[in-house]
Amino acid sequence: MADRRSAQSNPAVENVRAIVQLERRTLDEERWPDRISSHIGRFVGSLRFVAFHVFAFVSWAGWNSLAPTRWHFDPYPWGLLTLIVSMEGVLISTFVLIAQNRMSRQSDHRDHLDLQVDLLAEQEMTVVLKMLRRISDHLGLPPEHGDADRADQLTEKTNIQDLMETIKRELPE
Image (cartoon, rainbow, N blue to C red; front, side, top):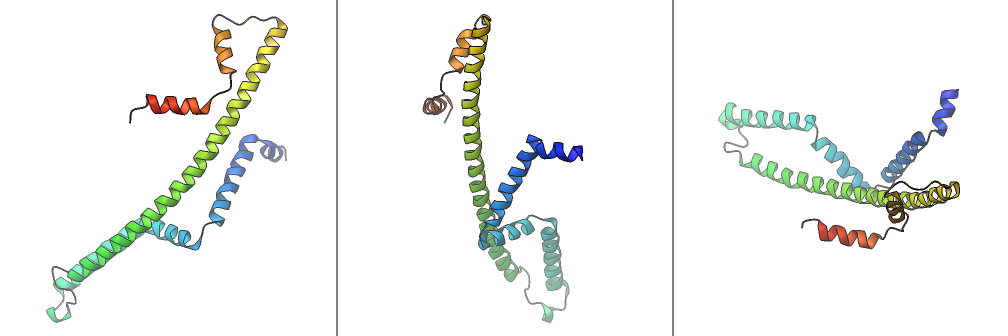
């Protein structure tokens, strides 16, 4: 019973539950084309898909090479097989691109959430630093050498635009 109560009030467990809830909501909001492309993408990326194709290609080539000539439906160089595999490749690559686009959108949403949480944490830490500064001043505790200047810099509001410009300027193209 105590373990259950501690798990319910544990911030890490609460965070995991919130993330799971967000992921479930995202899955529930998926449109049917996204669901179909997800299922196809998962199947195409499986060993069952590879095994099926190896079996199909070997069977196709074997039948059209080893069976009596009158039973060959696609004689060597297997033009029909080439056409089918080419069309399949186009469709599979399209499904892969759809899945990548969806994953990119999900990643963008997560990145925006991360940015918001990071900005909020930065604002909270600025307030905490200011409060600690007031507490240490009230107690008459002088900062150690160099800490006062650094604390002054860290308690200033962070200008996001300036940071972005610095990153653009400093990072190589």
